[in-house]
Length: 255
Image (cartoon, rainbow, N blue to C red; front, side, top):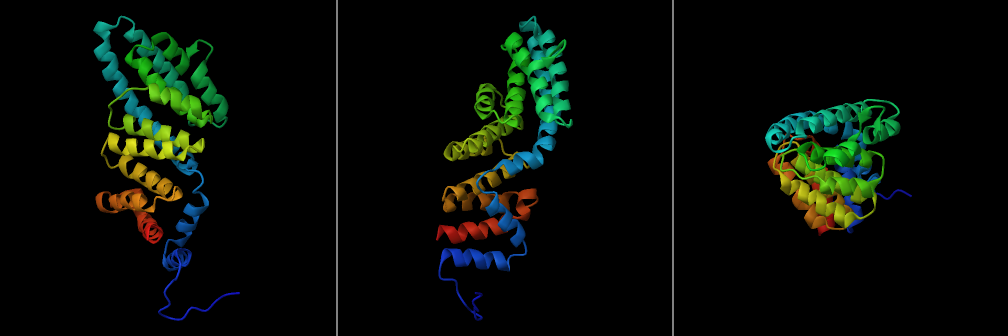
């Protein structure tokens, strides 16, 4: 039965305070949706993976060009490795725009006909810059195939200091750990993703993921620091549009 609450009523418990915050917020629907999906952070992967990984694929072309150029003199097979990776990358790109994605992800990993997949590039040219980059692609493909241990394995083996690739690789490892219900490890890698590079794209994205996961782990005070950084440092980001609701929730839970 509904209970009347007179004007000036102050919530007595945290649950009542959160309920009041939800009802008074113009983004209550978003708030409730966040609660419903709190057990898994896969929502971010599903909604954003094509855009993010396509963007990274474009960035990787530039990185690959630089790596290949530096390797031409010191590594005789660098040019061949770059060519093989280019073919494998075409399969990777096709996987993110096709309909039968699981099949295409597998093809991008294993190769098709005379085309090498990412695993072939790693096996044949693992010591080259191209082989290193193929480890990143393989990790992302395994993540989408829900083979989370292998995703962690290949992404952990990938070595880079690129301002976009490094945080996204570490954040993807965090996603894999979350899907394995290893939430503390997931939070640790989201934190590493935040610390890897400061930019307007990956930093607010992983601050948001770290904050929501911290809430799930009953670390409201820690979550609050992440959300406040979004509000103060990245007010124009996509994540800033709902951060006030998250700040309100974290403040209530931190009391």
